[in-house]
Image (tube, rainbow, N blue to C red; front, side, top):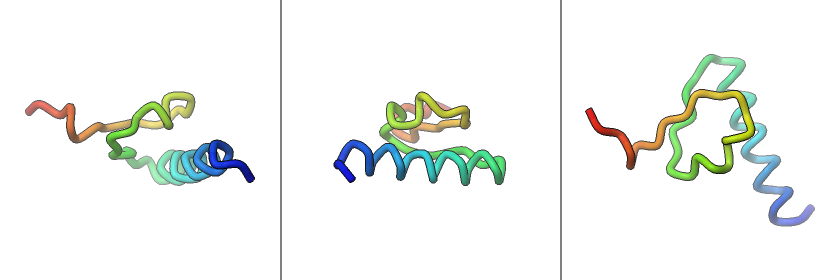
Length: 48
């Protein structure tokens, strides 16, 4: 499996788990999850 495919697969597994359990994915790299229908939170962009 290529490096890109491995990252895509990992992101898909994380996104699927979050979606099934109604969780928010907290990550700095939101680009990896842009194509998945999942709630995202970048803690480095958070402003209370």
